[in-house]
Image 1 (cartoon, rainbow, N blue to C red):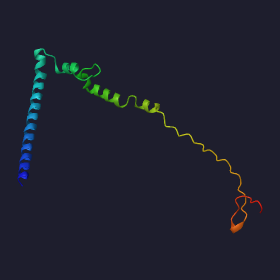
Image 2 (image 1 turned 180 degrees about the horizontal axis):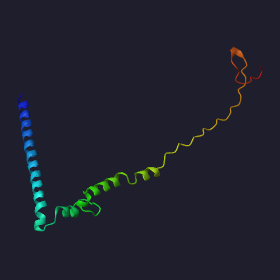
Image 3 (image 1 turned 180 degrees about the vertical axis):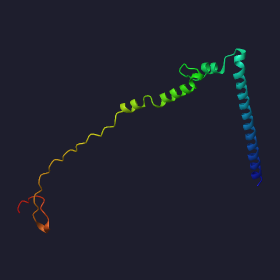
Image 4 (image 1 turned 60 degrees about the vertical axis):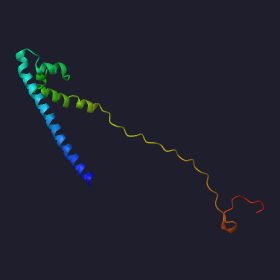
Length: 134
């Protein structure tokens, strides 16, 4: 019975600490957003590199284009159109269709010699071989 109370106390304590940890993580995230926003507005006034410059240098490879060129409406439509439609039809046309498997010829069994006709012998059975003296 005491173990149940201890377990319940540990669950409540874990939930409280998880809530506190999540709150601290969200506070840190909000501070990062505030600092990035302040940098966004203050960097051009102070002569520092803009956020666009930082993304261009340290960010993903955008094909030599700046973030403003990529996120412009024309840039977005060109990028999406190029990724979706270009080369799809050519790839589908060049794909080779699977061929039907070649038919397998089954070997023909050799013909067996004709069986000798059964002759009734002793007890109604056909003799296996000629008996000398019969």
